[in-house]
Length: 238
Image (cartoon, rainbow, N blue to C red; front, top):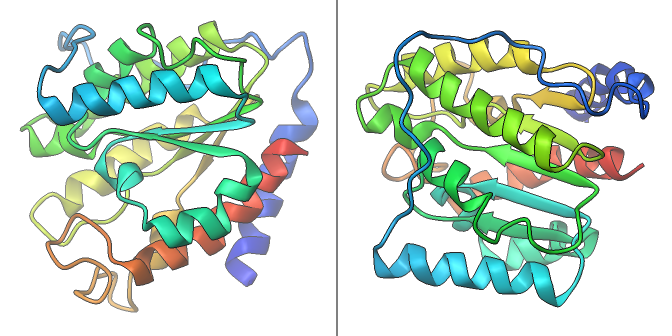
């Protein structure tokens, strides 16, 4: 409970500052690297095409107050936990397994935002950029570009930017670096929260009870994230 209270107290000043005059502003963080960033890119594997079509159809069927954009960490939420904790708040799972920042940037302009504009966005993307051999600065810049595009497309929406979830492989140091960078993007109608810290033990490690392969999460891990995320989403909608 103390962690939830701390997170809620940390975002209250941001919500108090939101007004029509500054809701259309861009993100607070500056460009993270001069290295050329991958252009928005579609994917053509069967699973991603199926998920893209499913998300595009869902946003046209009914309005969703919150859309949760991400990769496999988002798509693989345990169905029972999602339906109990997040679906009742009107959250659409718009995660696609394997997505990198350039893939999400592409689908934002190809159907994922074609429905009724959501009140809020939850964004968790970038871990696959690291796995693809990119530096923390390049991964963070890809995240920043998605934030900017979301601000342009949804000027009235509040964005909850989540820090990358922990990993137990060689990329954990890079995860920490990305999170330090993108934390600076918080401000105005972009709110940063590192809820993944709840998955670390006293030694700062991600244990096998929470991730069997060191990246993807178990039911227990998703339950911990849900306890952190649910009150944050409620705050977004208030």
